[in-house]
Image (cartoon, rainbow, N blue to C red):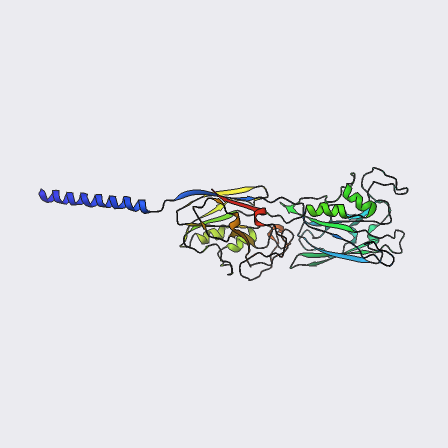
Length: 408
């Protein structure tokens, strides 16, 4: 009996010790804490992705910057399928007429996405601004209407050239009105390419509205060839915009960001899919197999437009780090990601710890105006470069003008 009592006592002592050790171990283990990270698209939408002004060189005895008969001017711009080029210039030998394509502007791509090049003069129209009597010049208040009896394509020749790699057009405008009954100079003008979102132009009547009263900016061009008002208005409403993709969020240990390494090639784990198409599913699956990755989350399930926000809750322990990435949607292969290590228990705004990177897997084009971009269902031209921060080749808004990323 004493033997059994001894065994029981020893067993009880060992059990107590084990329980005590387990309690101590649990106290020593880092405790997991829940946080929420949010990604807000704070961009101020702009109607136009690119715009500019053009002037002629005048000529013998003409000091004004007009395009005289026989002369040409040209300018370059970028565009993708569905975008159009609008421009306006005065028919100089009139009281209030102006040249412009019909809204939304010159058609630049066929329905299958192939660019339109060569002579596109058939798309130019001549408009009566309706603000001056065509004979006396007296003020009137009529609607903008096409000028009857004048074939604008006989007075102005339009020629488009296109470079596929950069999705860049060149428009050449030639004054062919010489030796016609409607010989005229062309005034300085303004041009613009409308931004798109959800497959629709943000402004499909950018300069004027046929059948309605004119505005002060077009009136200044139509009556005196003054393009300054329209130029200032359009330039103030021009800028690169973008949506962002659902964001991938990773909780990991160690000091190496598992999503990317700047200065090295894309590792082939799915970052390409995120950077080119906004699809983080392959990257998530790859990251979940890494030994230093504890958990992978995806915030959102659809593109995030300006003014919208996505967020996701994550769990992390004291010594963990957090990393994230989201596509710059209006690009060929750009993504936002933190460039500075962030402790997973950090609370606050981490936008300033974020940078815009080029994945190096597709040739870059003008953001929001490149026909090979996923935005236009295009197929990007491959390249094989290291992941690097996006430089100043294009006028991309500052990070804090696009994103606000907060952990709380």
